[in-house]
Structures are given as structure tokens and as C-alpha cells.
Amino acid sequence: MTSPILVTGGTGTLGSHVVPLLREAGRDVRILSRHPKESSPGIEHVSVDLLKGEGIEPALKDVEILLHLAGGPKGDDKATAHLMAAAKNSGVKHVVYISVIGADRVPVAWLKQQHGAEQAIIDSGLPWTILRAAQFNDLILTVVEKMTKMPVVPCPGGLRFQPVDSREVAARLADLTLGTPQGMVRALAGPKVYGMRELATSYLQARGKKRPMMGMRMPGKAGKAYRAGENLALEGNDVGKRTWEEFLAERVS
Image 1 (tube, rainbow, N blue to C red):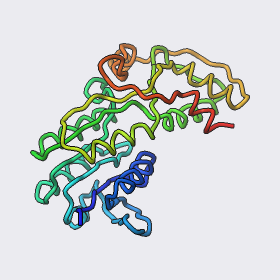
Image 2 (spheres, rainbow, N blue to C red; image 1 turned 30 degrees about the horizontal axis):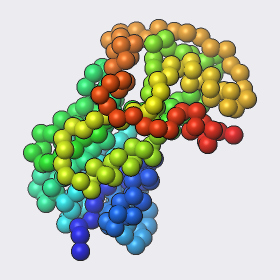
Image 3 (cartoon, rainbow, N blue to C red; image 1 turned 60 degrees about the vertical axis):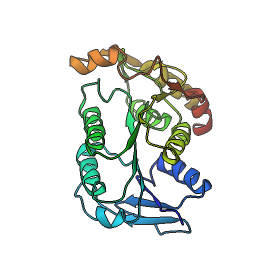
């Protein structure tokens, strides 16, 4: 009997794609979340609070592979530090983490926390694999939905994204999780780069709506980093196949 793969954030956007792939590979999965669902054959749900560091040690029992997908608007570095502190005292032999392209280059709080989480894993002394991915189509959709509710849509100049399909990221993560530790692997981004105006316009067209748009300049070091494309993976990385337009056609009627 193989040990269960521990997955944090297993009920989220990415986790909901990864967990079935791990089950298809014949692996049992133990999902950590603050509000777990009822367990089912091959899938065990365990209640853990990573930010408070509560309940982690029992959840790691008999675990050799840890797939860390959990994330939020703040505290990812702290939560990961708690997780790694517990994992160091368990039998974990491979930690796999999903991070974000630009975590080490774009000076905004959330990305700095992602980089801090990466460092907590690297410093743990455990064998690890880290995949940095671009923003998911799902996240971009949420952003443009909110922006286009405004009477005038703000469009920061120079702000570009390379949205990637979450299912393609999930497939890559499943392969990495079932493989051997590889350190920092090639990043994964979508096949096309879009400006914010282009993303908002295509969404409005898909909804049959129109909104006036207003260009604006992003100030400070963060604006400079985004204008320089530090959040993009333009060369030497892996590129997905599914475009933003294909995603929109499926999700927006």
C-alpha cells in the first residue's frame, strides 16, 4: 500500500483539477483545508489551519509526497513556513510547490509572499520541486469581470498578462508530483500575451457589452517591473496551448 499524497488547497481551482489526475494514477490523496468536505474512497479530507500552524503534524502521518497548492491574498509565506517546520520532522521525501512567475522580480506584497514561501521550502532541507506559472485564465476572468462593472474601465498602460489554463498547470503538477525532485523547473505560461485593455475588450465583446476605457499609468517600482514584463515568461520556459479566447468561449455565453 502506497502512502497518501498530501495536497494543500486540494478543493481550490487548481486542486480540483490535480486531485483527479493523482487518483487516476492510482494514488490516494489526503486534502488539507480549513473547511474540509466529507471524505470519499481514495480521498481523505483533514481540517488544518496553516496560518495558525494548527493540526499539521497529524495530517503528515505516513506522508512522503507533499503538494502545496494552498494560497490566499496574504500570509502564504507564514503558512508555508509552518508547513515546512512540521514536514521536516515527518517522513516527507518530496515537496512540490506552485508559485507565480515574477515572484522574485515584481515588488508587490503578494508576490513577495510567494517568494518567501519558495524560500521556506528551499531552506527546509527537504527535496523539492517548484513550478512557477502565469496567472490562470480563471483569475483574469475574475479581474475583468470586476473591472468592467465600473462605468469607466481603468486600463493600466504596460500591464500585460500571459494567462495560462489551470488544467494545463494541473497536468504539469501531477507529473512533477509523481516524479522525482527537480528543484526549480521551467515556468509555464499561456500561448499569448495580452494587455489589460485587450483582455477587458474581449470579455465585453463575449458578453455583448460596451464600456468606455481610460488609460492610466502604474506608478513606482511595481509599475516599472510590470512595464518591463517581469511577470511574463517570454523565453526559455514552457508554453500552454489553450488561449484566453478559447477559455472565454467556454466560460462566457
